[in-house]
View (cartoon, rainbow, N blue to C red):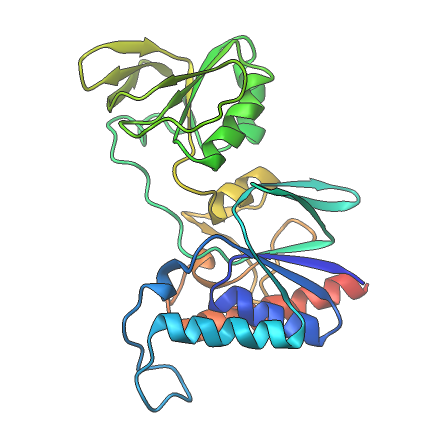
Length: 285
């Protein structure tokens, strides 16, 4: 049975799972938390609900429906996706999972941290993808900005090629355990500076750390992080996809807020259904 892994447990991801299992696919929904919908107090503009419903209740009903039909829901954190001829490997904090196709439905992208120099040096020492850019830091000093599992995964990629790798937590506590060889600096960051490219990070206490590159990996991996790693084009801060949810990467689909447009439950549900149908056609070929 073909395996479809859906990253994101919101309305787009659950809608996709419902259509996928009804078509005979093995659908696995990977999600870390309740996302934006779970924090919504009142919804009164969704078709078929004459009374106000909370986002948490709507989400609970959607999950129950998907599970009743046979979808497998896994509460976990996805840290990366790799693509090969045999399909995809989805990396999680608690293991790995093979997928014949992947559907990204992780919601809106995260904001870039408010640190002077980050946007100015994007592509010139500031990166968001270690798998994409680690090669350019062979024998150089690199840093990862973040403190979660996603940041540690990026650091592991860099440790294999860079001369030194420092985890910059920007005032947050350092995670544990740490990969061997990874240094940590918990001081708050004031700015990222350099000439043609990144040369240093300036901390709030005025001290500097010489660096050749900074990889941003705050919080958990999001839609654009996954897309970058797999070579899927972006439209600003969203995944560029066709109307049916397909992307330029064979077997990779996207749905919901991560594709932009109207950020509403109704659109997310529609996107999830369309992307699932597209994935079904792809896997049946």
